[in-house]
Length: 225
Image (cartoon, rainbow, N blue to C red):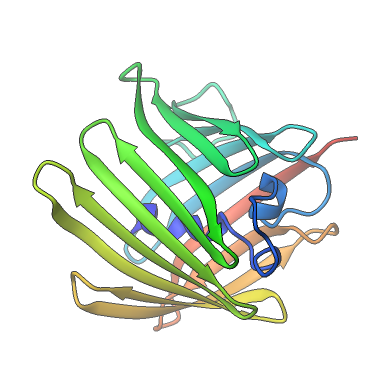
C-alpha cells in the first residue's frame, strides 16, 4: 500500500480546474512560498511498516531537482542509509524522472507525468525488473480520484487495481476512500493536518475506520531567503 497511497501528495486540488500544462512542483505538491528543501519522515502503523525519510530539493523556479530516499533509519543525518535518488527533467508538457539505486548502482525506475486534458492527469512508471504502473488522476473542485494499475509485463498479470478518492472540504483533505479491486476490499481513512505559519502542511495523520493511526507524515520545510 505504501507505493500506492503516497502519490496523493503529488497533485493538489488548487491547480486542477484550469490547468492545461503542468505547473511547477511547488504547486503540484501544494507548497506555498519559495520552498528550497523539504525533509519528510513517513511512518506506517496498524500494520506497522519501516519508516521512510525523503529529502526534496527544489530550484528557485519551484521545480524538483532531486529527491533522496532513506529507507532504514528515522534520522536527520543525510549520510546515513541513503538508498535511492530520484532525478527530474522538466518541460512544459511532461515531467520525467528516474530512480537510481545506490546499492545496485543502477537506474531501477523511469517514468513521467503529464496533463491529458483539463482535470485529467497521467503518471506512468516502469521498473528495471519488468513491472509497469499506470495511474490516471481525475479532478473536480471537491475531490481527486486516482486509478492505479500495476502489471508484470512478461505475463501481463495484474498485480494491483486500486481506486482512491480524496475528499476535500474548504480546500482541506479530510477523507480518503480506498477500493482494492483485486482483493475486493475497501476502507475509509480520515485525515488530520497541521500547517506552519506560511500555510504548508508540517504534520498529517491518516486514521483507520477504528480510529487507530494508519500513516503519519512529518515535514521540516526550508525556504529561500
